[in-house]
Image (cartoon, rainbow, N blue to C red; front, side):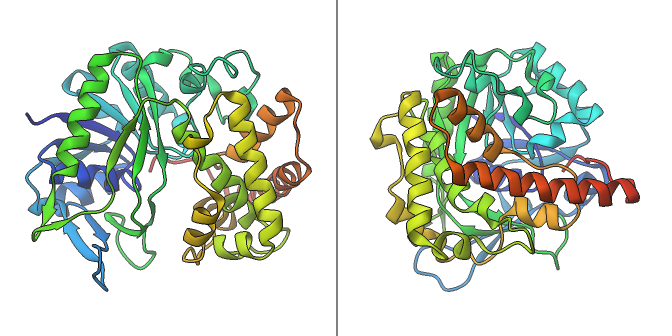
Length: 359
């Protein structure tokens, strides 16, 4: 049976959308007017490299069995959908049109599957050790999440690495690291059955007889998606330097011993919260993957490009570590550098009148 899925965010969200469309499900992408017009006219193009192939395959939405459309936030009717995917950068939910849409989604009591790096606050409330912590300052506008029931919020570890090629249109996404979306379960078994259905449908997809990377994998553990924190704090946020941003590869491999110490410390934080070591990704596996990540992280590139706000998983982990009584000087230093670069960008943006926009 074809499901109707609403995905907030047409950039990274188009990757999950393409996988669902290939499986025969229908997807609506929420984005800005000009992007919606482009997608409704031309569809999307997601480039994925299949196993043992040298070049990326362009997968065009208009050639897939599912139906794709795109709308602005104010034109969404939540009653049409079975599931909501959260694929925007966390600061974008603070935009007025998005806040209104989020209220409507929460009131419709739709299950929400986040593929954000920044875990939504309602998801964190499902973890007993975090439920009473003061974490709101890590969010651009924590009130966005107030109306959501924690049990209706799940989180994927957004491990697949993808970016919009700057020379291409806004409906094109290039997948650099085609790993899997690892999702935690919902509180309601009916919603988990829906995820199992989508998981199986995506897994069954073949392209010219070949398996297609980037799967949806459902786990019982609440902590499997948090394995991404070690990667983000070791690589992505350490792309920030007092000068220009560096690549993820250089951030990780510039001082591999220091990188492992940061990675291990964030793993220990997850363990203190209740994670099993089996939920985590070994440092050696991450370090090997980082060798191919030759660009700065999207967060570092965004700030270098003048963005006034980014997802602050670095600050979130700092807040958690301090409230657990296990602070880390290198994590604190990373947060200080990110703060500095954001303050520099804020001052420059104030001069230009920069504001947060919907993806």
